[in-house]
Every structure is written in C-alpha cells, then in structure tokens.
Image (cartoon, protein in one colour):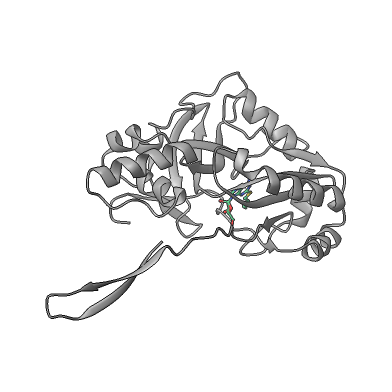
Length: 268
Ligand code: IVH
C-alpha cells in the first residue's frame, strides 16, 4: 500500500495448512508423530508482527506477502493492551512477536450502527473493520476504534523456552496479551474434543473464530519439523464450516422505475 512504508520481516510470516475433518487431523498427527499439542482459538483477525528491542516496542507491521508488510507502527501504538515497554526483565535484544488484531464483536455492532446513522457504508464483517481501522493515515482514527490484539507466537528470536506453552507464560509475564483459552492436550483425540467444545462455545468469545490452531507444544520438535515454503509443519488450522443462519423472506414487492420498468425485490 502506498499509504505505509514497507517493512521487511526478519523471519517470514507464514500461513497455516488446513484440516477440515477428524481424518485430516489424524493424518497430520501421524506426520508430526504425536503430541502433546497446544490447542487455541484461530482468531479471525489481522496478522500483525511487533518488534521489540531491549523491551521497547520499535515497530509493528502487517503480514503483507509474508516477507514485506506495511509499517503500521504509529497506528498499533494506539491499541490499548499492547505494551510500549515490556514488563519484567531479561528481555531479548530483539524479538518479533506475532499475533492478531481484531475488532471485538460487541463494539463492531455499535460501530456499524454509528456508520449507518451518519450515512456511511457499514463494514461487511469484524475482520474488515479491524483492517480498515488499522490502515488509517491518521492514527487518531485508529485510536478511536476499540481494537485489541492477542499474541500467539514469535518470529526472529532465539528462544530458551522448552515449549509453546512456556512461551505464552513468558509473553504474558512481559505484559503481552495472550489467550486464556489455550489448552495443552496429550493427543489428537483430546485435540478433537477441544475442537468440538470450542465450536459450541464460540459465541462466548469476544472475537470471531474460524477454527482451532493445533501446535506441537515442544519447541525442539517444532524446529526438527521445520516448515515448507508456505507453512510450518508443526501446526495445523482446523477450520470450522462457515456459520449458517436462516433468513426469512417476508414479501416480494415490485418497484416501478421512471420509465415504467417493473423491478421485483425481496423484503427479508
Ligand atoms: S500460529 C506460522 N495461531 O491464521 C504461522 N495463527 O490462516 C503460525 N491465526 O497467518 C501462526 N489465530 O495470522 C496462529 N492462534 C493462532 C492464530 C493464527 C489466527 C492466523 C495467522 C496465520 C493465519 C493462517
């Protein structure tokens, strides 16, 4: 985007391979050769990478093509809950922290109501509103939107932790917003139970989720498994089917144009 300066990530921001069924999950389980697995919600937000140097937030960027994203530092600095200075001590000289910026669902409904009241075009979904709110030339506008972030990993960093769950405890101790919804489970059967439980709880969460991310918890094993050009081999996204709702057709009416042309339309 010409609005923002390019930011080259130190480590690429990858994508995730998808699983859509228990069979897919079992096939992945066989490839990685077993748990324990860390399960957590897949946040339907906007991927952002934060760079901290000696505990100070120095830059924030969107994913872009995975190698180079947009520098949105000034805007991200306005998001409540993202520390400008890390808590605690022993911070690395440099660390890239990855997570999702999202628009909380309740506030999203309010924002759209306000936009419609003032004659504007509402956002199609919370994800678009998060993206639109972050990609503002004027950080004051971003500041006026109740964006939030949850972090779920790291890029460039020589981590001394043993597991993904230990990393979360450390990031949380540094004051970074981590999910409370993660669980470490023994195997793919337990991971599948987590997936089903979260699907029935999905409306109790303050952001939209489009599935569950399952990660090999052990970091040494993650490094062994490595990645393809596109995605890590040590993680998989189990995607929920898109939600379906019913819409009731109340009436079919006809509008008559200036030239007498009749156009039927639906009242839903
Ligand atoms: S881990 C190397 N954990 O989903 C990528 N990603 O569809 C590791 N996402 O690009 C990502 N929630 O931006 C991870 N709990 C979560 C996530 C998550 C959402 C995003 C992430 C990724 C995309 C892939």
